[in-house]
Image (cartoon, rainbow, N blue to C red; front, side, top):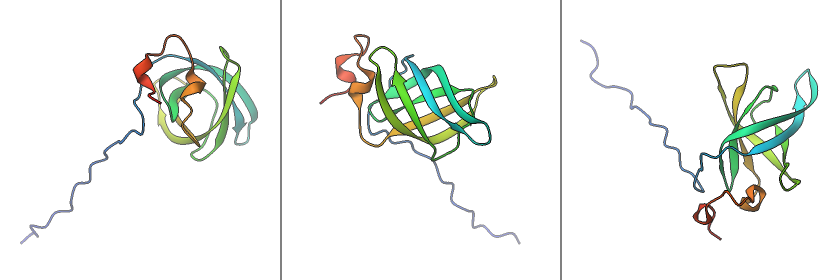
Length: 119
């Protein structure tokens, strides 16, 4: 007779430290691709929050890798760490990056709602 015991199903629950906003913000991402050298790529974010962003990259990056983001509207730069990767349908990869400390000022723009990043 088969055992009635079943392995528990674990659900992945995402807990955001700050509200995610589905905004397209132009950023320049700089880093080093394994085996391919340095890269500098202009792209759009898929979403942003005070702790980082989700973006699409053509360059090859790995989990834990450090990259530099530059906001061309303000010329601000911030270092971020790649925290998650997912395939996209085109030749790009969906890349989640997180800042070492919250940095809502990096996204400074008149397009952001005031409630997005409370102080």
